[in-house]
Length: 580
Image (cartoon, rainbow, N blue to C red; front, side, top):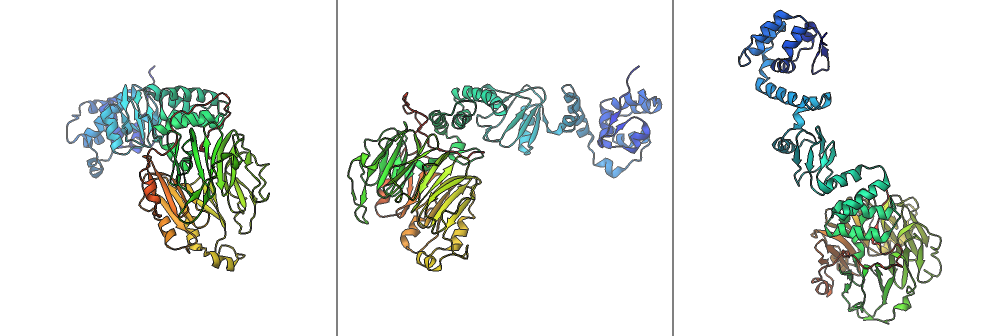
């Protein structure tokens, strides 16, 4: 005995009798069943023979088809409703449904037949309509390079040719086979096994995929699926940076590459992509090689080398014209025996280093022993302020040692921090969500503010509040006293003077509103420096500074593979990672 099938209507009802059909009648559904012959079969199975014969005699091209069909089925004909329905559209949709049923009986997919692409042309049309979930039923499809934020669901396991950076573009797939290396990348992305994901990222990275190179670097950095290795992390993220992978340049949900260590001010020094440095004061750094990060202070400049050691030069300002005296003996700075260093902070003659194991070393007692950092652990970055030191931990919290007279150390409750910058009266923190937080002397934010001190340093509470309303910030720089500069993820720069009492010099220092394509900023000593994506430098006006730096080029991360010797231990990192 044959199984009698029901007619499924748009409201979900499974119609089994002609009375139920009348109660749940839908013009589009019934016309569809008429065009594919299911209506006649359904009537015959239920012994509505008279109605079935009448339906067989209908002319599908007749203008009265809809009215005649209603009369046969005993349904009131509503002309206004019927006129809204184009029979040709119904026939085309029905043809698509019949074609789709060859591959699937999934009601969800059948209901979304208008979002199914059988050909490349249909796919392009759906993308032009900004459809965000598209079903693919065909042999192969090409995803346009410009496409972003779409989910593609395969019905018959089609082959998809996608842009290499499809993950970055938030393109998601299900039930498809991606072409070439993209298939490996997608399997790695979906893997819940860290060891398996590492192997897949490795395979794709070796084939030159920038996303895989970046993600492999993060695996090495976090020790996921592989032993933690900062050298390998830096190597692979450099490769991704060499292909302008966007996540290397901007803050995202996982991490960001700290381009901040490519430039420093006070005096101005910059890292070239070949591991050498340039500076604006004829400082003897010509023998520096294999440097991966630079740091500058009032009396010392320092370079972090790829093997985890530190090179330094002492200098002294003789006058405001920036004439310098150089003792010329690096060993006087006390870092000659340091190893496994991954980060530094320099102020005056004080140097603090972060080791690959998260511990901290200093070149001398900091502020007469007031800043004891010997027990700090899990540190990824440090910043030396006036009489205090801030440490940024791997989990996004901070630790502090030293004087808290201006409440600049009141940061114990900070969370989700990815960068810190210190000064005399304030500590500046950059949060993972791209906002900025300020601790310290703030006019009006605390009833215990020292009003006499506020008057002497002219702290502007409105400007402080403005800074704390910044958003989309990926890097910050603080000159230690007054000027705060923020780099936005779109490559523009914002600035603020929270103590505007030094006049024109600081106005010039904040003159960054027209800067574009910036990947790093540094402010200090009366000027602000920006590193552009193309490796050139922007400098705010300050005496002869501009003429010294305006012709610099090839500035940026060391993208070539620097030599790593056998005794190198997890060193050479210029990453600042925000953990999730």
